[in-house]
Length: 561
Image (tube, rainbow, N blue to C red):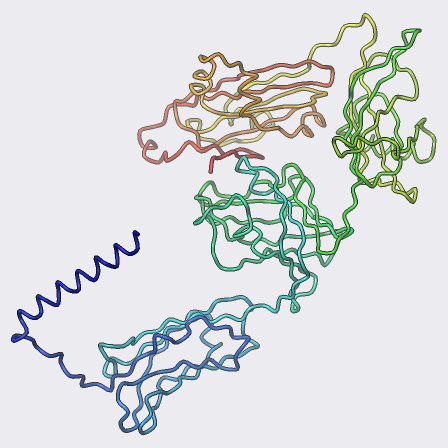
C-alpha cells in the first residue's frame, strides 16, 4: 500500500507538470545544439576491476555522432606512489563511422601489491564532452591475493573483551591460505560480517582477512593490522604481545598475549586476550578435550577426627584416567612449584593416586564428573591438589594439568583472618612507591594499590562515588554492586607477588571516584571494600581540554558500546 501510494503521487506530479507545459508551449525554447564531438563514458562501464582476471583494463569510450575519425584527449589521475605500475594512454581514437573506442590500461604485474586497491580517475577533455553523458570515471583496480580456502574452522574471540563487556563467543569462519605467502593463514570477515556483536555501520562491508603467521608453530604471530571494525573510537587494530602456539590444529595465545588499539579512545595498545581464551581451530581438526576443572568441596572427618580433603572435578570427554596428589601450600600461581610437583608425581618420588574416568558419568549434565579424595589425612592448613589427565593410550596431557588451592579446617580450629588490603592514591604517589617519576595530571588521574595472598576471586568496578551512593541509597550493598557490575580481576599478580596495582587517566577533575571490590580467599573469608579518591580541581586553562571521563587502565578497560 505504501509503495503504490508513492508511485501514484509521482504520476500525479508528472501530470500536473504536463498541464503546465501545455499552457506555455508557444514559448518553448529548444535545447542548444551540441557543438563538440560529444564524447562520454558509458554508464554501464565497470568501475571495480579485478586485475587477476584481465591482461589489460579496457574502458569503453563513447561518442554520440558516427562521423569522421577523431582523437579525444583524456587525463588520467593516479596516486604518485603507484604511477609506475600503470601505463595509461593520454587519448583515445575513434575510427571513421565508429561510436565506441577502448582506452586500454596496461599494468606491470611484478609491481602490483596484492589486495591493494588502486584508484584511477579518467577525465575527458573539456572540448570533447557532452551535457548528456559522463565525462569523468573513477576506477578501483585491485589484484586480490590468490587465496585458497582450507574450509571452515572455529574462532573464539577474546580481544574486544578488553574494552567491552561481551562474552567470549565462538563461531564458524572460513579460513584461507595465500599461495604467495606460505606460512600464513587468513580468517575471512572474522570481525566484520561474522562477528555477532556487530551492528550495521560497525564494520566495513569489503572482505577483510585476519592474517596469522604460523610458519613457526612455537612462535605464532598476529601482525599488526586493522580488523575492519569501528565501534566509535576509531579503526580497531590488533597485534601480538607474546608468541602464540600452533599445536594439533589449534592456534592459541597466552593470557595478555595479544594487543588492541582504538586510536580515538586513548593512544597506544592495551593487553588483550585477558582470559587466554582466544583460539582458532583449523578446518579438519579433530577436537580433543582433556580439560580438568577442580573445585574444593570440603573435608571428610574419620572416626579418629583425622581429616581428608575432597575435591570435585569436571573433566573432558577424552580423559581416560586422572593422576592426582595433595601438597602443602598454595602453588596455584607458582610455576616452578607446580613443575616440581608434576615431576614428583611422574617419577613416583611424591605420593599420588590414579583414578579411572570411565564409570564417572553424569548423564543429566552431559559432563564427566567424579570426586577425588586425598591419599592421606592432613593437618589444618593450606594445601593444593594437582591433577593430570591421561588419554586412552596412557599418555599424560601435561598441558591440561590443573591445580586448586584450599584451606583444610579441622575440628575446633579457628580460620585465619583474610589477608587483603586496598587503598586509593594519586597516580604520582603510586609511581613514587616504585621509585619512578609519574608525571600525571592529578586533576584527571588516580591509582590504587592492594596487598594480599591466597585470593580465590576478586570482582572490581571503578565508577563515580555518586553513582555508587545512588545505588546504596536504594538498599544495595557494596557486595551487590561488585557482583552485579564488576569484572573478574586477574589474580596471578597478587597471588604471585603479594601485591597488585593499577592507574587511571582521563578522569574528570574535582570528582570523587570509588573502586568497589568484592574479594574471597581460599579460607572461606570474604570482604567488600569501597575506596574513594577525589581528583584535584582543573586549572582554568585546562578546562576546555577536558572532553570525556573515559577511564584508561593498565590491563583492562570497560566501555559501553
